Length: 205
Image 1: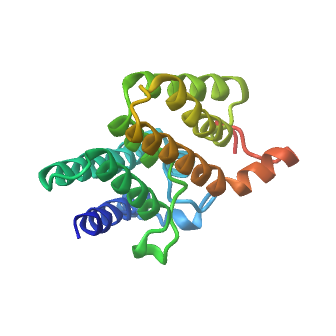
Image 2 (image 1 turned 30 degrees about the vertical axis):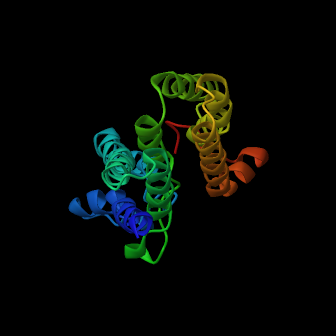
C-alpha cells in the first residue's frame, strides 16, 4: 500500500503541466506554438528565456520534491528509502511525460529527470551529466542532442561513481538505464530530425 501511495502522489506531482500553465498566464497555449511541446525548451523558444527558465525550474523541482517525499514516506514506513525514491522518480517522470490533465500528452521529461537525478544520486553523477550536456550543447547547439547524450551518460556515470553496495547499487543502476531509455524514446522525433539534418539549433527559428 505504501508503494502505491508513493506512486500515485508522485505521478500527480509530475503531471502538473508547468509549461502549459505558465504559458497560459500570458495568454498563450504552448501546445499551438513551436514544437507544440509543453516543456521548458519550447516555452523558451516561443516566449523567451525568463519564462523558459521558470518552467525548467518548476519541472525540475517536481522531480526533486517527488523523490524526497518518496524517500521520506518509505523511511517512515520502515521500507527501503532507495526503492521509495526510485518508485517516486519513475512515476513522477511518467506523470510529466503523460499528464492526465492534458489527455496524457506532456513533455519529454528532461528537466524533471534532472530534478530526480539531483535528489537520487551523489554530486559526482550530477556534475558528470552537467559536463556532458554543456560540452555537447556547446559543440552542436542542439538541446535535444545534449539531452540525449546526458541521458546515455547517466548509466555510465552511475556505474563508475556510485559505490557498488549490493542490491541498492543494482537498483540505482537499473533505474538509471530505465530513465535513459525513456528519455531516448521520448526524443525519437528529434533523433529522426538530427539524422536528416532538419533539427533546429538553439537560437535559430
